[in-house]
Amino acid sequence: MKTQLNKPWLHFLILGAVFYQVQAIVFPEPKTVIGPLSESVQDALQQQWLSRFGNLPTAQQKTKMIDDELNHDLLFQRAVELKLHLHDSIVFDQLIRNMRFLEIDKGKSNNDLFQHALDMRLHLRDEVVKRRLIEKMKQRLLIINPPAEVSKTQINNEFVARQYQFYRSPRYSVSHIFISPEREAELDSVIKTIQDQRLNATTARYLSSPFMSGYEFQAQTTEQLARSFGTVFMSDLTKADPTVDQWHGPIHSSFGYHYVWVSAIEPARDARLEEVAGQLRRSLEVRAREQALQSAIADLRADYEVRR
Image (tube, rainbow, N blue to C red; front, side, top):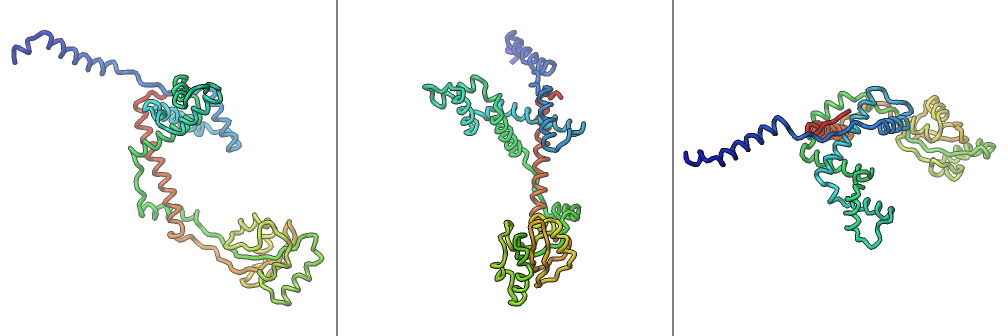
């Protein structure tokens, strides 16, 4: 053993390995740079915000918008490094379409066209490909770092915190007979016929003019009914303090006149947990997914140099 340690070639190998490790620590490989975003990209993001919300973003909103875009570039870069684009049918089809549009498809198979597109680096400049790879990378990160399961306790706590959002305003179930402005002179006789013959809403419908939104409305809020009849109609109906199983009106709207049968009124009340538990669970699952994804992206950022 002592004889082997005295051999110069062994010393050379050991010193070389040590030097390599020291060099890796002292002079690490440079990280791939992500960003900064060009002025044109930042302007495009700002215009998208303006088109969507009708006003320019605040400084805080602009910062988040830029960070989100840098994260997209980061995910795209990582997906390309992992070669996810090489085995995805959507990417394959998109690049083939691009090649055919460029009229470079003569005498070439789809596989040849795909490889040619890669050689031309078309996959790095196509927005459809970029969005697809970003989504695949998100899915991959969520498999590695899955979101936490939503518990019943979380749902209960969320219900308490947001209960005011689930207040159920009054709901009305109504039917109506519509008299168009052209038939206004018939209004009194139509109402008299309904009253004299004690017609219900379904039987009396033959007396109605056509109404685009229909004739029966079940468990509708005042806002929902206003979308069908207008705010003036809804205001007059609620002011009349309608009772169940009676005709009311005529009530005027911007469309004409309505003779209204009220079949049910559900008074305002707070929502019950079982009514909104599914909605709360979905909301919490979306939040947990986003938290898990942001945590995974933060870890991934350590492998890159992200420049704002």
